[in-house]
Image (cartoon, rainbow, N blue to C red; front, side):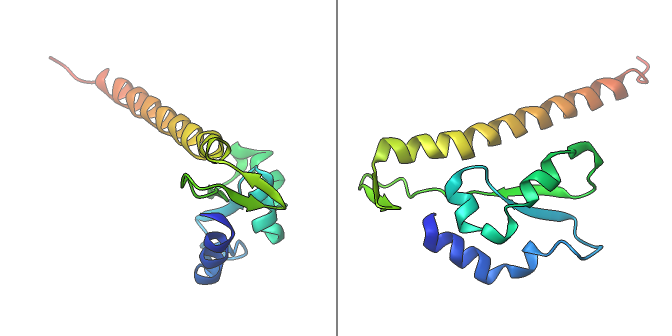
Length: 123
């Protein structure tokens, strides 16, 4: 979490950020919040590139989110104090809600596939 976490993630996973390899099945993209864009500035252009035409891409896209630690202690970012409520809301907006939406979409696709296959079952 936070700036140190983003720096460590980048340092130890530089290869994951490469997109020029034909074998690249997964593309990492900074999250939409300003903190994520500042944490991964060299890759901010990918948001437009990979989200403008999602049905035309062949790779899976994973958003990398800069999220404040959810400890009860306040933290400072950019000269501003960030309290627990703000930190919690950031996690809700950029991590939990999108994750739940992705899960629900996946579950719906699984049900549609199962229903399409069931039309061929003879009792």
